[in-house]
Image 1 (cartoon, helix red, strand yellow):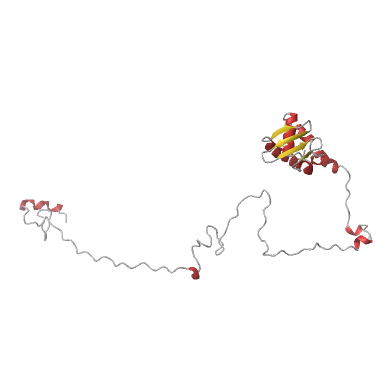
Image 2 (cartoon, helix red, strand yellow):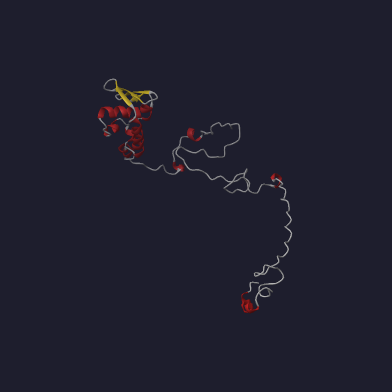
Amino acid sequence: MSRWATEKLTKKNEYSHKYTVRPIDNVNFNVKDGEKDGLVNLSEKTCTCKEFQNDLLPCSHALAAIRYIFSFCKKKFVDFCSDFYKTNTWLESYSGLIFPVGHPTEWNTPAEVRSEVVLPPEWRAQAGRLRKIKIPSAGEHGSKTRHCPICKKSGHNRQNYPNPPADQQVNVPDPPIVPPPPPQPPQCRKCKSCKQEGHNRRTCPTRPFDNLTDADNDVE
């Protein structure tokens, strides 16, 4: 089996484990998947979901019926697949000789074929604006970084733009000017001995004369 077909069968087989299989006879089975029933015929390789006969691969209903008969033998899954999905078929298609077609001037083209003019198919433009954004394919993931339409930078948009245009700016009044407080008058220092103003500890009149030698420790 090809890698693509093997991955398809593996994914369908995971879904089929949740189904309930009710045999009708040796080849017909009623498979319940919780939403709608699938009537499988293994002899004709058909199912009412139309997937078995259209893709020529067992659908999830057919895999549940095959597993019900052959007791989890995965090798039997391949027997119900078309030969188109097998690698041997691919190898046989390239086993013959393939000759090059040669230069177009050397082709033996009939006159009626050379005179035939192939016109492009008729096309009519649809109404509305043309689509510029690419339609993502199945399986594409990832997010695209959006940019501001004004400055073309990321991190913000038009609504929360840090520098709006002049016509959109809102005039915010300046805050009122508060005058500074008046200067405080200088504080008068007092003597540490008598707590009076006008002198310090060294020149204090109440200090004994014999203690004047300690004036070196004056605070002020």
